Image 1 (tube, helix red, strand yellow):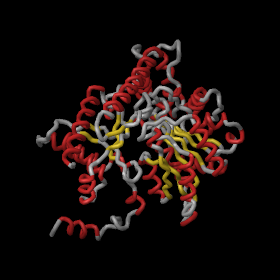
Image 2: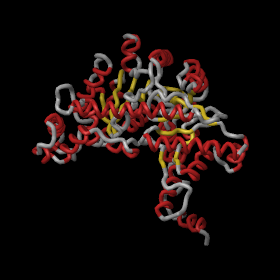
Image 3: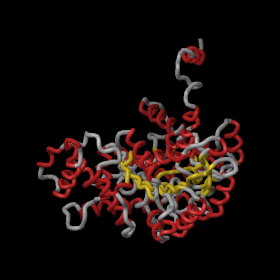
Length: 491
């Protein structure tokens, strides 16, 4: 009996099979950890077992996992988390007093003075207060009510929670959600799981991946023919495209949302990652309030932040928050109920979020070291963003927009027709074919642009700028060498 027949016979006795499982889960795709990454892990295993390859290691440039790529954690954050995890250390003189005072405050807010206790479902009260004060400072005094702040398991959890609230209806009344293309695959995966309609609007690659009002209007008008678009999602700074939207653009988007009666979702997890000269991060909330009561009293907005990106890079702690503005009180009660079903976000992640929004201040013992580490991390990322753009643009057939912010480049790659034809004959998307070949020949793991969405007939890949500079230079040199060889092979 063949293995396939055995599996089929085995499945017949199962309640849960591939045919009886939730069909929406089968529709979900997450390219950042998709087939190429799975193959990369297999290759790593083969290398450990002594299988000969034309390379000695796999370089994973597929994901924005800063510490895995060698970025060092911020000393102050780890000191406070150590004190919170093992309070006996509060008696140790090796820790600075500001770290101890932060730790004591956090522990006093925890049940039983322990990081291991559940917190309130919306998050630890003093942390939400600190988040609110941070938002007020960031936005030049625009008020923030801690009761509008929810601590989340990374930003992703907050985004999915809001989508759960938004999605309803069937047929022509089914909820549509407008997302940028290219997009971070969390959005398309969550919409597939929830059975919502994904409404694509395309960023303008020729204008450094900017948002275009006429494209938003086109997308919305088209969507209204077959669904009920209720929300507009914006990622700023952009993932995977690395752009930083201008203030004028954000004003236009807010006015558009108000006019078309759309709920705004602002994914702002890269808000400290702005590198390009002349670019500046503008929060949607700040711009909303500066537009006046006509907008600030009416436009519904949820904005998201995380401990995983920026200079922190603390992905594994899964810390984050969302702030909701102008939410219907009855819906807000339902939101609180929804988050309570999950008990609470990880308390160590909440503690870390507190340190991000309540970092060392001038005059405190840790301030100088904290600022030195923060500045060094962001400066190095800015250098690597420029380096990546410059080197990729020396390769014939690759065009890379300036990496204005975030942690990725998303270059356009020109593929020979012969390669496109061979990929399609194999049932593969051409840039998946390209990236898989690069992995097999060089050990470099990138994500094909098709995993994020792109205009028909264009091809891209996403590459993180996080590797150490020396490794990044090697990686870029290998990409250049591979692209030239690939182009020649299929000419």
